Length: 241
Image (tube, rainbow, N blue to C red; front, side, top):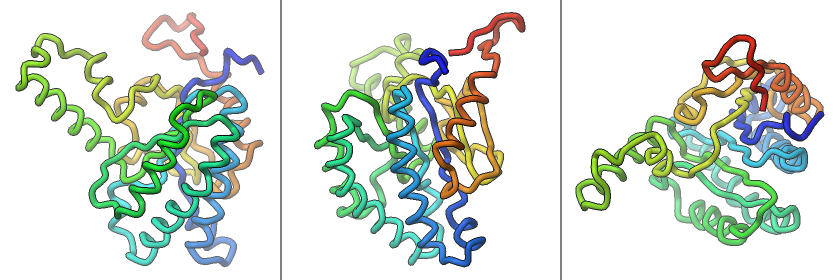
């Protein structure tokens, strides 16, 4: 597989941990734990293959509606693992960032997030973007508010607003998503990165995320490489990235 065929930005909707656990006679917490372990493996593997940014939908704004004990377990899981991953990401030269709103995340979660961001901020091999307490509509609203404030303060004029400026005011300014993967067979975006996914290739494997191995990731990349990405151009054009 040529390096030029590797997508620069891969986004994954991490889905199916609970159903995987039920299928295997385990509780949902065990499914989330196993899913996070798989996540660690896929992050390093993807960046080793040449992916520059991997964005992961690990907890949406709507997930706070879940059972309180499950939400608490997930927050504990995030805190404990982010602290542990600092050393791993330093060794692997991976930069960790977060996308989403801070409210209503607990201070301990925010502290763990800020700590790993600070410790890995100078790493250059690749970026893992944890979308935690993230909602795509919220990101667009937040970007719009920042632009409005800049207009009101005289920092920019209305005439200055274009797609480039809007992207600069999103949570992070990354390349557009080339490939979206949603595990577990569900075929919807669920409010994930709507701006960044405009021209992404979509891939929906039936596999639950805890079973989404390196081999399954390779299958997704193979599918991506066979797609004819035209970006609105002629059918005869081949614009695979």
